[in-house]
Length: 191
Image (cartoon, rainbow, N blue to C red; front, side, top):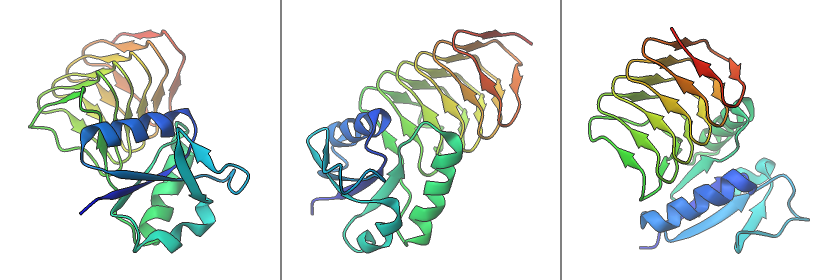
């Protein structure tokens, strides 16, 4: 049976998640939900079918949903909306990402192209590990946290819930990033 994924957010990150889902082979069909609907009817050649308020109409039409927006607070709100609509919150992993078999991804997480999640790392709920980012061995990424493109996280680093490390950041061994921190692009964090 063909599986349909509902993606909340039809912007840039949503399109990348859609491509990842389809390339993975786990999903055969993707539908978008976006608050720009009905003016926005299509994104990435895929249909935009509703706004977030109409989410509950899809509970019996899809096999899972993911919130695909970079804003951590909005992503958290959308995850609540997905579950309140009775839809399973699912993760998407690009087929050219590497996730160690010892890692349990929190529901709703997106792991993008060429990302790497190392042995015994812990990934919370609805996190983003963006393209070419590394979360190395024994590191912890909190719920709704976001590693931007090319972020490099060394082993044992702890990134708090809803923290955002923007593109090109790095965190050396033993660094702790507090909850809700917003770290500027290119910042090198040291313990």
